[in-house]
Length: 112
Length: 114
Image (tube, rainbow over all chains, first blue to last red; front, side, top):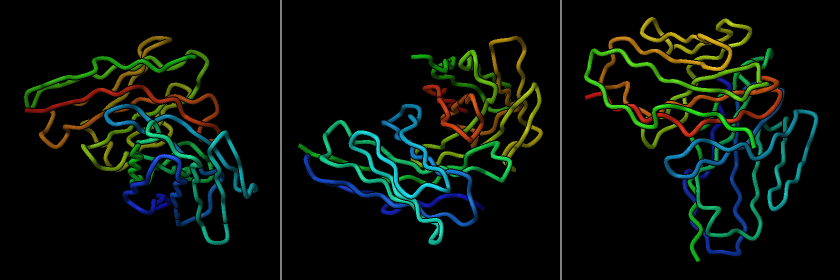
């Protein structure tokens, strides 16, 4: 399975601290995406990084991709209470890229 | 900002009954998906739909499930003869460019089978 696996499963930090979540996957990918899910809601697309990219930024988000290690990390800088959510990485299902497969997610709690 | 709309937000059904979950994808998107999430667990892929046919399906998507695009706007998931273990959040998503781009998810339908 190409399913990504996030690590850690849960993370608790204070406001202002940085949060780092990791994702590992098993086979080659075209791209890797990160999503956020607030409790009981749908998933929201955060950022996409292609297999030929190593790092990407979007606001307070920084994503890295190491295809040799088949891993990615999501860094949220200067976290806020509103960042409290579950974060999922998703990889494309096969080379045709017709569906994303999601990992189990990291639950982030940011306390003020 | 364009949204994916799902109805109903919550459905309770008796075991063995059929349910239809409805989705209105973003109008210019060509790829449609159904995922489910059992409470507190991972988001599981069910099926993808492109060009009016199923393009991929998971092992979860057995004969109990079917999808349809009955008109130019709706995308439905039918679950025949529901089981207790079908209780989950069902999410519809659409994408302009398949998994080459990001997906836009709806808010989900919480299905409870009793």
